[in-house]
Image (tube, rainbow, N blue to C red; front, side, top):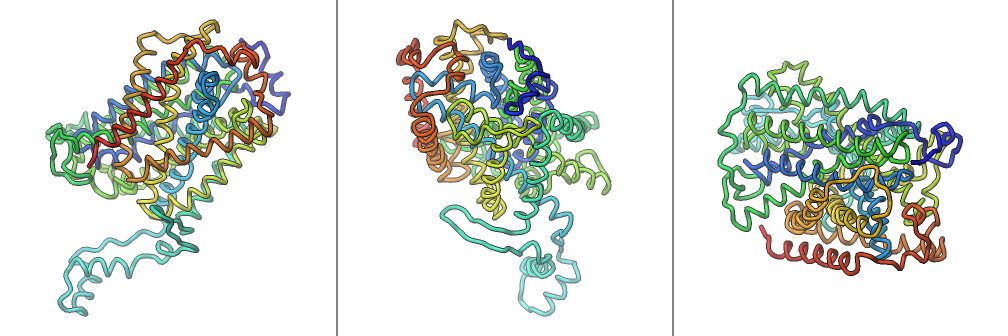
Length: 569
């Protein structure tokens, strides 16, 4: 236990401040439950009647995995940055590039949440300020078009009237280009997203305590309505039990026809588990703040376990209610898939008025802002600690007078402005960014779950404030290979190039790490990083786990490749 007091630490402007307890971390991670609202349409599009079960299975997996993360977080009370930072040390003895790979993949998984969230929030704001008009066959505009264009179908007339009445700002762009599987655009969604990104930066710039306090109120404004929407239809009898059967996969993505439990069906289910894991596992971000905890030994395990309990509640309740009320046809609506119609659906589930619908729209915007704040807080601290420990360039270690890692935050900001040009372009580009980000997340997940048992073997002498039951540590290890299966089989469901693009961006850590370790640090790791595990530079040669880590790596890679080859649409 570090005897340094919070007051002492605040005097050091070059370090993060010990200013929060587990409650602060809980609220900083409170944006995670909102992810279910933005992924439920996508998961339903490939999982069909199994949607509620896919989310329930995913969040249970996430909680089992969290026991491993809670144990290894306790080993490093002076570190922030999350599970990837704590797990990377375990791989240090066995392969230098693998250790920073964990940190790099975790950052690439979390930081796109900023641009993706801004895209969704910007779309809601644009819908409120410049909505697309809705016409039917009986609308005067449609009737006029039919009268002036003989032989045109009613559907074509509706499309023409809609195009003519759509506000120009919705189609305006300063720049547009296509590059391979993605598009890039500086449209209205992009510029609104830029403004939201800057707001997030301003909040985080004031330090972790003020960010946690603000997110507490935002979190309550989001979580309470989610609970209401999840519970009210159950008590009012709105649940239609026929919407949960048959428990079979879809025949094709985003089509209500029932398929079979064949290779194609399993591939779609794994695609659902792949996307659901992106949301349901994410509460592990609550341990990104270990070096900012007043009492790391107590606060780290409480933060992740209480965050996990909240996610269990909302990730089982909300999908169950959505499916029970809307049915598969309702959940497959394009407005649920892209998130733009979720607020209206939530209002309808509780028989809300127009006022309630507008309130729900505002709550959805706040939910996205909460997600954006969570993404920036976690990802910036991953960059910061990665630089402190010798994985990433030194400039990322700079913090401001409030103890906020501003150099890392500026890096996050610049990278997400680039991603925003892609995510804001169209739905295909949006899901491409999300899928590649999730590939990185599952790679990090595999490395870190295996880091748990490696730490047990190599660093068993280090006192653990909290030790996970061995059976749960073993379960987490098994789930690392299950997740490798989801990665290999499920990523292709969202984009045919997602897996390979994910491998490509993870490989970028090699030149980044080479620059830091061999050019800036002359081939030596910072002494304080090695002090955390009680070894010196020469101690890196001691490998108690033998070839087991290498076998785990080979097994994980083989699982991904075989799953990608075998499971096809």
